[in-house]
Amino acid sequence: MPFLRRARVGSGQRVLVFGASGAIGTSAVQLARHFGAEVTGVCSGANLELVQSLGATSVVDYTREDFAKRGVRYDVVFDAVGKRKSAQALLNSPTALAPGGVVVSVDDGLARPVPSDLALLKELAESGELRPVIDRTYPLEQMVEAHRYVDQGHKRGNVVITVGQGDAYAQPSSA
Ligand SMILES: NC(=O)c1ccc[n+]([C@@H]2O[C@H](COP(=O)([O-])OP(=O)(O)OC[C@H]3O[C@@H](n4cnc5c(N)ncnc54)[C@H](OP(=O)(O)O)[C@@H]3O)[C@@H](O)[C@H]2O)c1
Image 1 (cartoon, rainbow, N blue to C red):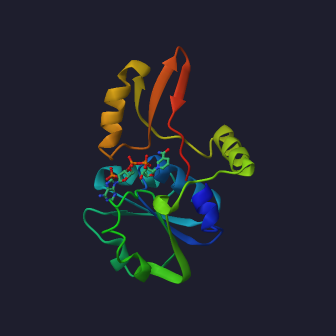
Image 2: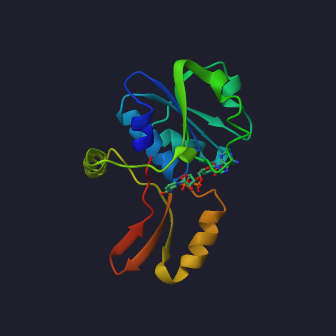
């Protein structure tokens, strides 16, 4: 949420989410849609359907196509991958920006949610408009295995650690 707020995502804008199938990306797609944007999601082929089901109006498989060469201009390019893995792929992203457009990355500094962000997230989760995407669930004792899986960098949405009967700690998304 803080990243989308920083980019002033709003109604009628074209927003591209790079890494649309991860924890941050799946939330960003849904939130940008909520704010009235037309969303393009970039992910690998296996996740195209998932990203469409979250509200993306178009999807790009980054293993086959460079979004910056499609001739479409975006008001916001949101990099939800970061940690330099996205650097090469985003090299050409300025050419895909509409006049006044911005590139915002999860690498741009700590996300600082404000109380109104949390209130909106609660409202959207309760209404079902914001759907958490859960890939795998591990019990607390298998935290090491959970980290090994997450460290591969290709989870679909979130990985949940269960900490007690009926209780779960889900890795929070901060798009
Ligand atoms: N999750 C959080 O709560 C959180 C909080 C703060 C910061 N962050 C940071 O935000 C970033 C994203 O984290 P995340 O948990 O959402 O997901 P993640 O597990 O880091 O992966 C995000 C997505 O990146 C895609 N991806 C992986 N390698 C790629 C590459 N070389 N080129 C293009 N796409 C690639 C994957 O899609 P495919 O599988 O389709 O390839 C995956 O869905 C990380 O840098 C993380 O440190 C996360």
